[in-house]
Image (cartoon, rainbow, N blue to C red; front, top):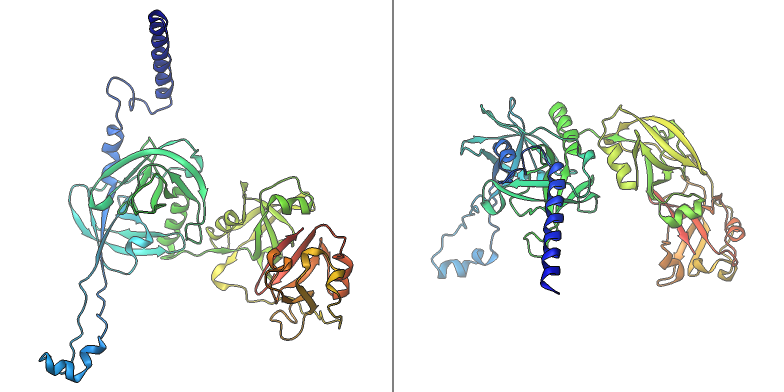
Length: 476
């Protein structure tokens, strides 16, 4: 490249870089990254005092008896006392992080797994003051615990609306990793709505801001210094950070905190449905033009769902106006509300949009009602497997007999046996399943099964009752 051309290219490059930086700074809170000395320090000066170190002392555990020590010859040979003395292991200690959310009342939020089985909890502040902490309450199903300390001159963090977060937003993680107090790392929001990390109710924020052991219970804040999440977990093969960390969103934290503060525990709402994710394949089988939602496979009797008029095959798409992409989101939306709360539910029924209202029951009450009795025993036999669709090969069918746990509870055709490795087994059928409908047509007799699932049938949408649950199974 000629020198003059290279010089012009270099000038153009730095001009574009300067313009890019100016544009980026415009979106950052005033004064934070502006000027000749960009820094997060002004925000952190206000934020750091609200993030604390949580030191936990566990309960002592008794050392197990060693059978060898109880042998008389062994004890005499080594001149040991006749009675073996049981020894206690030293009290194990662990350290994590916490966030002050109410300075006036000394309320600290941390993770349940940080304080689990704790005998003593000590909160250490940024200025090195230490206080014994009381466990107000915890919720293992969301991994949140609420502590309280008796202290003055505390700093708390304002709680932001985590629903406003977007992938790409800048965030800062604050905690005490590996015992290194008041450590700050930064990154972006890498993903939202993450599930499958082990908690029953999950809606994790994924971030590449470094989160390591000891960060648990610490703060994830936005550039305004507001709490957007509680750091909770990492995905790692070594125990160290690889750029995939997870935080519990502040809205979920706030909901759990308010209930623990009021009741000392979390009281969860119950809708009374069993269901599954709406997959593109199920959507096509249902004749729907959407690919996300929660399919109702079973409506429990005498439940809020039944009272509201919800039905099997309804697809829930929104709760209180918030989009529901899968059944996990529905479980979160319902389970994080209190009994007695009214929820507005948007469903698709046979392709038509409907709005229903339901008043949630208490999840602790469980399902104490059975389904209506029905006699599924019509005396039909299994018949030839060649008379059925290929996807059912290897399965045998019959009436719902008394030895089936669902006898007298549901009307349908029972799967009496499934050959290992057969097409029916690979499709997901199990012995004991009860098929209640095929391609949205009710079935109660084996003869109806043969009529609806003949050898020329290209696709089967089965509604199945399995134990206390239900599901839709698509077989092609």
